[in-house]
Amino acid sequence: MSDSNINPESNPLPFGGRSLQFRDKKHLWHPLTQHKIAPEALPIIKAKNCILTSEDKKEYIDGIASWYTAMYGHCNEFIIAKVTEQMQNLDQVVFSGFTHEPAVKLSEELIKILPKGQQKLFFNDNGSTATEIGIKMALQYHHNQGNNRNVMLAFEEGFHGDTFGAMSVSGLSVYNGAFEEHFIEVLRLPVPNGKNNTEVLEKLKSLIAENNIAGFIYEPLVQGAAGMKMHDPEGLNEILKICKENEIICVADEVMTGFGKTGRYFASDYVVTKPDVVCLSKALTAGLLPMGLTTCSQKVYDAFYSEDISKGLFHGHTYSANPLACAAALAGIELLVSDEIQQKIEEVQQWHREFDKKIKNHPKVTNQRQLGVIYAFDLNVEMERYGNLRNELFKHFMDSGIFLRPLGSTIYILAPFTISQEEMNHIYESIEVALEKF
Ligand SMILES: *Cc1c(COP(=O)(O)O)cnc(C)c1O
Image (tube, rainbow, N blue to C red):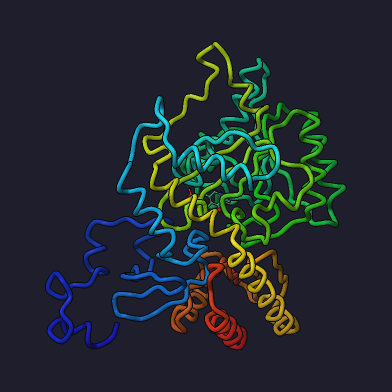
């Protein structure tokens, strides 16, 4: 903190000079945080395009688009204008028994860009509930038809969220010990890396033969929380083909990969065999408002369509299809498909490719991977996921005005599409400094 802020008289802060950090500690409990050992939370007072400004007036380039949400930049004026307009007319209405234009329009615009075969939209609040409903759709799809299928299939090291169903299918559940005995039954498949495809397919076939698998949930091509681990589209395609032949509902968790980050609208666009269900959140609402969506094919929807009320999907969130969130999503899609953003996506990919060439022979750089605007590599240094060295690496970036969030020894960049070349170069330079320092 700068000296001027420590002395409340020279730069008065509200509440007698006590900073947000101080007041935060009284009542707030932060996500994914062990408060006894965690460093203090950094108060942010402003976000504009790619820059976060802290209470002590330091600026940070948001190199991960605030967990892959603000892909068109923070406080994007176009999106704000659209949401402001919506706000004057309709804020919230129950979506059970009512409908409204923002939801209808969003369904029309989203279906145009979703992977082929998606036909119906089910609204929810966040990424975890989006996958939770994907799991429920897969299980109830079979239940409604009188099939005894109650097992989910998922990739090793996948991440699908923190509610019970989502936690169950996540392979990264390192700190879920208190809940594991309540999980739904899940079988795991290694990700196909191009070399092990035959083994993975053999394993898949034997799992199918020996179990009653209802659905397969997967992060297509990039496993975000696992450290931007990327896998082979051909291998994934073969898995999906076999699942479909066996009436296993394929649930693509595109919560992270959706909306242009992979260079296409959705990661599933790289794979010939399309999912039955798609889960969306994060960049769906462009970082402005929280919302999730689970979309599905006509085939899935039809399994719930019946005169029997109990065959319906009896799941509902109070804020389903919130009109403001729908307006933000619509504005986001308008930007995503624009020439300007598509060109920026191209440009960022090119910058990453050049940066990769520059660092690839460095002895500390291994496993570089890139898909679209996602660039990652591993530091050839032992590091625990939330260990001390990792924390020092995080601090190194923050000290140089860069917000990156290394996952163990994985350094990745997933900045807003709107980042300038100068800002990106600043990120690259601080990575190069880190290569010498760690
Ligand atoms: C972030 C994420 C989730 C969970 O979304 P929340 O909005 O944090 O609940 C689920 N799946 C994937 C792939 C994610 O990246």
